[in-house]
Image (cartoon, rainbow, N blue to C red; front, top):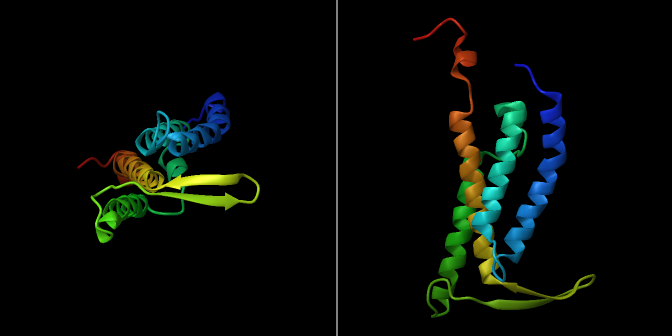
Length: 149
């Protein structure tokens, strides 16, 4: 497979910027526009860029975890975050706020909406990785160019 040097270099430069932007959208999402879904879709766009530059092996090198593990972890985090308020007699997805004193940053407010958004973020990223895993391979390379069934 021929690779374009311009595409490879561009993706390597842009990929990490897109990931950082997606994390910003995740963290700002419960107070401003953004959130886990939008941040996850942005990671999906970054993964698509890596696929365009290097194929399925480039996508597989992004994470050491399998896509279904990432998706399952996201689903578990979102479900637990949604269900924990039931244990305290509140309704599903009832919000909670905790204030932490972080040494460098000072006082930081953390909400349960952030945990739910993180679960959705992981779920979307896992789903995107699963889609590339399922549809990203070239079956002609696996079976040999001339052996069509």
